[in-house]
Every structure is written in C-alpha cells, then in structure tokens.
Length: 361
Image (cartoon, rainbow, N blue to C red; front, side, top):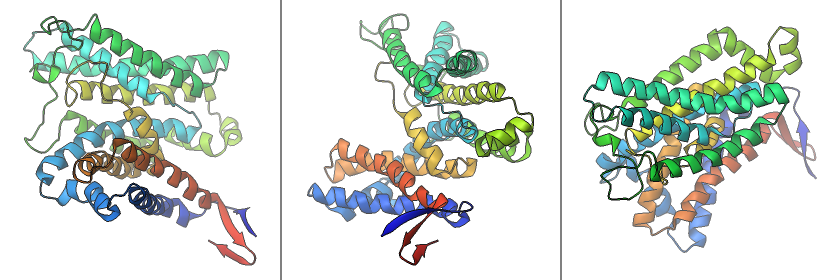
C-alpha cells in the first residue's frame, strides 16, 4: 500500500530537485493535453520553449520575454519575504495596479513637461508608495483587528480593478482621445517613457530594477537581521518570539516591501510596455508571481530563473497559438499545471513515499 511518511528533516535533494521535476511533469502533462486537443504535442512544446529563444523570429520574441519577466521577478521577490515569514499576501495584483495608477497619475499631472529627470523619478516614487500603501491596508487590519491578510489583500484586488477602470474612463481619460477610455500614451511622453535602454534588447529600467531587487533581496535574506527574522519566523514562530522578533512589525514590513515592489512593477509597466491606464491594463502578473515565487523556492536567484521561465511560457504560448492553432485557454491551463506540479512534487521535500519495504528518498 502506498503511503506518505514524514521525514525527520526536509530532504535537501528534493528541495532543489522539486522545481526541475515539476517543470518536466508539466511538460509531459501539457503534451498529453495538447494531444487530446488533436494538436502536435512535440510541435506545441517546441513552439513554447524553443521558438521564442532560438527560432526564426527569436530576434523579436527574446526582447518580449525579457519585458514579461521583469514585473514577475519584481513582484515575486517582494512576495518571497512575506511567504518566508508566514505572511500571506495574495493581493499583489491589486498593489501592482495601484502602483500603475499612482505612477501614471503623477506623470500625467506634469504633462506636457519635458523634464525627464523630474517626472520619471517622481512617477517611480509615487508608484512604489501607491503599491506599499495598498499593501499596508491588510497589514494594519491584521495587526489591529486580527483580520486574515489573505482575504483582505485578495478583496483589495477587485477594488483596484474597479479603480483603474474608473480612472481610465474618468479622471485620467485622454482629453484628445475622442471620448474613448484610456489615458494618454505614456510610452510616447518623453518625460515619463520607460523606453528600451538598448534598442532591440527589451531591457528597460524595470529590468534593471528587477536585477537590483534580486541582488538586494539575496543580501538581506542571507546577511541582514531582517532576513534572519523573516527566515526564523517562517521556520519556527515560537523560536522567533523567544528571540525577540516582533510579529506585528514583521507583518507590516513584509507587506510594505511586497506592496512596494509590486507597485514598482506597475509603474514600469504603465510607462513602458503597456503605455497607458486602461481597463484592460495587463493583468494577472500579481497572481502569476505567486507561482514564480514558489517555483523559485522563495529564493531570489531561483525567482530570477523562474520568472524568466514563466515569461517564456507567456510568449511561447502566443507563438503556439499562432503556429499550432492552440486555444488561449489551453495555454492558461498549461501554465496553471506548473503550480499544481510544484505543489505536488514539493510534498516529497517533507515526506517520503513508502510502498511495502520500498521508499523514494
């Protein structure tokens, strides 16, 4: 009879192998899914993982992968702090949207200024503060009233979505847009445009910020007292309280940090690839970043690689839809399989499979 047996200590091997195995399992499940739809499974997987990087039109797709990866890495890096400490911020999507609204609001307030060194930095600061404040709401409610940060942060996502739709049709609507919803195109506003730093590479200030965030997060988690408190609170809350860690302070700092980085991702997106405040502003980065964070084992370097992989599935999914005629829903299911695969395989980190006298270590 097959059963799970608790390990005395988490398996070091499965800690690092689980993400790789999860990717392989996802590919196999995806091939089965595509075959069931009557499509070429090998061709579909090739379109998703190979064509954007090495195919005939890779010169176009590679920059897009980089652009997609940047917000995922930024948001997931912030989420990792809270998740490691046992603070469950599920509302990064709302913080990302509020960062975009606040950043765009400041940029549009200065329109048509030509002072890039004033407008763009102020937009970045405003976006970061906007996301941080949106993250502070569930933090304060948890500290003061013991509310559940999962529910509060998640419900605030829907508030943010309503706000961005309202702003795109109201206060921020382009006065020269002939009545159509949507703000001015910030990517065409030189003082606020987050354009490519090197033409044709996809590298903009959001990509630079993501790399800096990964480096700083690594230093904090491995060399700073706050990082030690975060890791200790997640591994042993009782030991953390005995060592003097203030749980309320940890909740507030974790949600401020994750909200700020999500807001930063939002402002780089609205001033760059997205370009404007609109009801259809690119969504689900905040939710997808949860998958990225766990696929990267809540480690900054792992998140960097996981963010690139997830971005590849986004762009590769578009390629597969075009070349293999796969429905968009199938690509979304394929991406969702990655989360379920990592959750399933991750069980082996803390448990071993037993079948009679045999075991999997």
